[in-house]
Length: 297
Image (cartoon, rainbow, N blue to C red; front, side, top):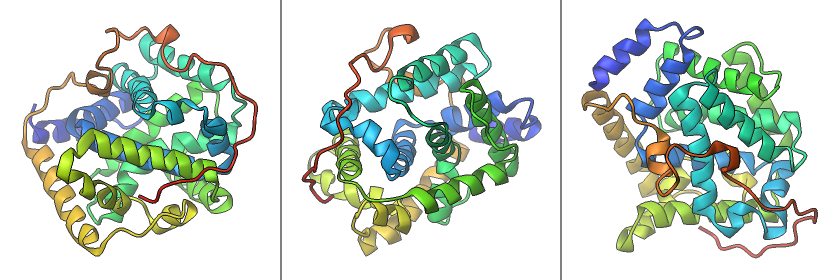
């Protein structure tokens, strides 16, 4: 299907009734290139660990999965999301992916508010990044469909998700204003996320461009929360143009309607993924995070 055909199909769908198809066509098919997905996911994760109660659980005194093997940890999470998006949150396969994630999370005592914020960071991040870069792309129908998709995921998790996109977005923004704060563990996790970005997509001499690009996708408040530097002026000028070119290409080129995040991030895993035993397997450490010396991206 061409990008134009996908866009027309999305606009023909009902954002409530057909939210699963809209979400799949939008963020897995039309904008599902692995680099774009990984960038949005990293920014969302950077938001999550700006909340100290979340960073403490993910960091776990330096023994968390993300600290031990950041690529594997990120791939596992993206495969879970890929299974939800490919099959839909109401399908047997989608429910199995949500339930397995909940089973993992239940070991760590995560609050419902922190879960809801994590869900919100996923629901809104792609559009927030494009807004920051001055490159709005998603249509109103698309945005509403994505909201109702992630609302369906949240309801399966047992969360009380606000009933409208506008109310949920405001809740997310208020939560950030009330809870963002610097922690050594949170910054250590962000350093790991930057390392995965560099090593995955920027080989050899290109590596020096990795951090400036990712920094342009973080807003001022998020960078301040992690004590990250501002992006270089050249990156601020060039990144929006590059992203705009990418979006234009996606709107024009043909796409495979069946593609999924699992296709890329599940490489090396058994296909279909054995969800019942996928992801975190280790014990639950109880210690508080120690001080951590970090490197500045």
